[in-house]
Length: 566
Figure 1 (cartoon, one colour):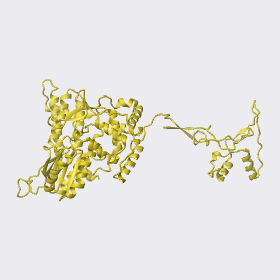
Figure 2 (cartoon, rainbow, N blue to C red):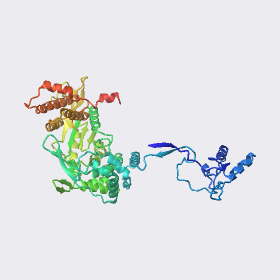
Figure 3 (cartoon, rainbow, N blue to C red):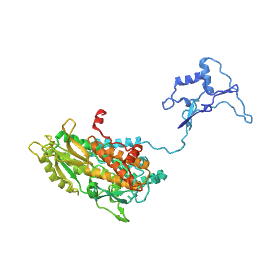
Figure 4 (cartoon, rainbow, N blue to C red):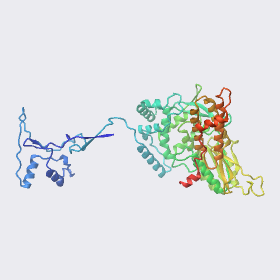
């Protein structure tokens, strides 16, 4: 914020003192003549007006000689206790520029800053400009290896990474959160920059936690890094993304800027509709994040990144141990799920292992059209002909085995997804040829009738995801049924809106309504446990829903809405 002050005491060079009256500068005619003459100094440049002698004696005499007027008499005055003349002495040479306001000396408005030395938040413009330059170099030279990238990791870059890091997430082994790290933020970022660039940074071990993988008893391991480690990983991700975004193919959608799971689903729907179904190879890689080969990943990274600081940081994160129940283990392969940099490393690995191989080596050898749609380690292959699908199904395990990966045979299958041609959903003369279904990103894809009576590819919430979501709501109600009803209503409303924001796509309205009905019944069940007799009438529950209503089912991602507002 700037405060504007009027300062009449800020004036230019002192004028000549005449007849006991002090002037505030040269007369208007002298100022005008000085501007029009525009004499040059010794090196040929125009002399600034403020550097010329103003209203000096010699200057005044020359002006009166030119106009023919009699010069005024300059009166010398003595100081009370001195014998010095008060006549202005004009220096022959220009002195140093005064350290003052640039507009000072012209009797105008002066602006003073009110913020003082308060630290300002740096703009993201400088970081985005550097990312654009890196992206432009990567686009112009696809085979270029970047040898100098670490100089971008300054405090401004780290501060932006800190702002983009989630503050309320799970803490690492040190228990430090975002609020604790922000207490001495500037010093923490300065020390982090010095340790990262000097090579003294040590990646702390990850805190191991387990989450349910599905509806069964299988669990998925997660590695939670410390908050400072998250900030540095975020900074490196923002440094490498501009490079690899120029290399990644359009078939990849997972954990990339301006790409989402709904775009991947829409791509699958468009390809299956264009091909009339075809053959779907549904693939599942067994424990991908735990079996990713470190040596192969390092070779892939060196093709585009050759900066020693960045490569050493990635090596330290790959070699960081995992702390579980007081025991520290160091994995020989894999990148832990839960780390900020893990999705980018997974995309880089599968880019070379799967995407480039399928686009450049597999597709030219096929008889018909084929498409790959991948979201992180979940992907499907769409084929026009069954023979092409069978050939790729045979060679795909060998390709993955070269890079230390393997298929989950129980979840990998070839599905006949040909469009039905009669009202029964089968092809004429082939009653057993009913098309199958396949799952991707929590949705089951199947053939169904549209309102016009034509066969279209529809999608609904997968049964395992539906049961898992209701199970989480039931567990929450069982744990919080003693809380106030208004608080429970707000929490359940947030859970419903979150469910609708992902599963609310065109054609899935019945599953959305079913989920809302399931939540309504679960809440009724656990509200009844609050009663002494364990019974809560439907009439009383209906009156309660009038006061605390649950949000209605909503199709958030509607193709009709997108078509109306492209």
